[in-house]
Figure (cartoon, rainbow, N blue to C red):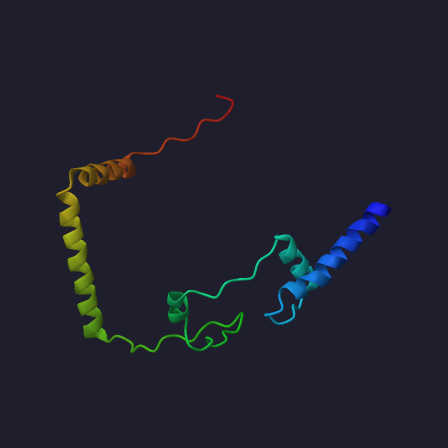
Length: 130
């Protein structure tokens, strides 16, 4: 009982002493944090570095409602000729990648092995009774 009263008196003294030591700062809003700071278990957060402040947006970002999809980007629908041109570009990229892969022996070997595995018939898994 006496130990609890002594601990309570020490905590009360620490709480009342914390504002006296920090006379140059505004009064603390949380007496527990003040006590923890006095005992060395808590600190104040330092201000952010300049590069952090500069990288943050100047205003708060707009609120995005939960459960509502963001608006779709505005992009025109591709017409027939544009679609064919894009398909041609993709085909040419695929051919360049195939040529580069064929010139690299490990990739060529892996591709050949993958094709052989696909052509090989799969056997039925063994059951526990066999």
